Image (tube, rainbow, N blue to C red; front, side, top):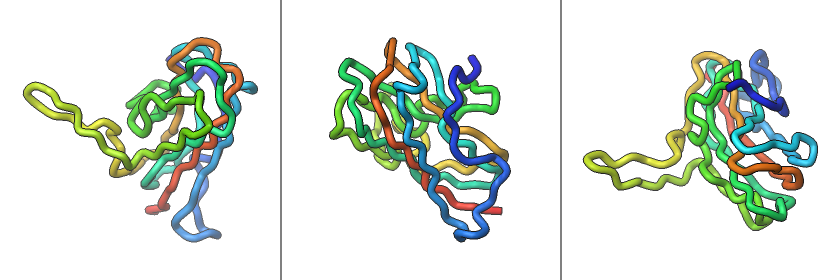
Length: 156
């Protein structure tokens, strides 16, 4: 499924030359503007080629007022999820005390193999341009405001 909304910040064609090789992308995403439904996606950040994304954060600044969880992950240019919850999984957008970051690791017990929740807890290198997007897990998200940030390193 392609991105249903485009709220992207950044560009797949920029390099962090003026501000050094480390930069932060920020998107103050308002569900009131984009009105997402269940399984709809929104593009948050365009990531240029040869960029290492060390961490993604989400801070809820306005609560939804109803049940709303989202996933944040890696998406293709067409808006297809590569790993929809690779950075953040089931973020509670109905509480202004919510602040989460992608560096938290949880080992999930599996038989016979354990896995690590948050596939990109140690970051992700984009050899080619890519996108970070969100997946809405509940119907009619139309109130919450979430501040997303991505800590990036220009590796070109």
